Length: 80
Image 1 (cartoon, rainbow, N blue to C red):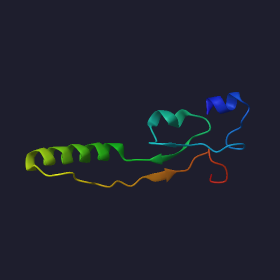
Image 2: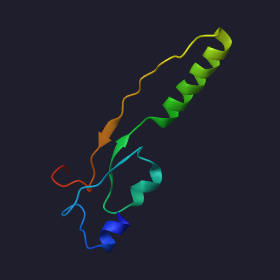
Image 3: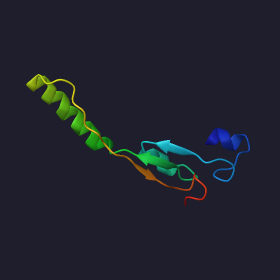
Image 4: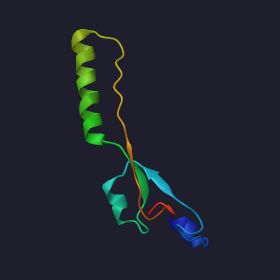
């Protein structure tokens, strides 16, 4: 976003920007960044549980799906 501003591109008027992971430090970015929120803590907990279960039970590859959600903020025009 800083590089776009350096080149005279105004956000979100000239270009929309979105991110992924919704990390807390990006909440200080201006304009506020639209992002895909992933429940990282729950994902990590499940990953550890699956790894332990596979080791203890001798199970094969296990799959657990996690949904994300789009958090619309000011970096995307017309979606505010």
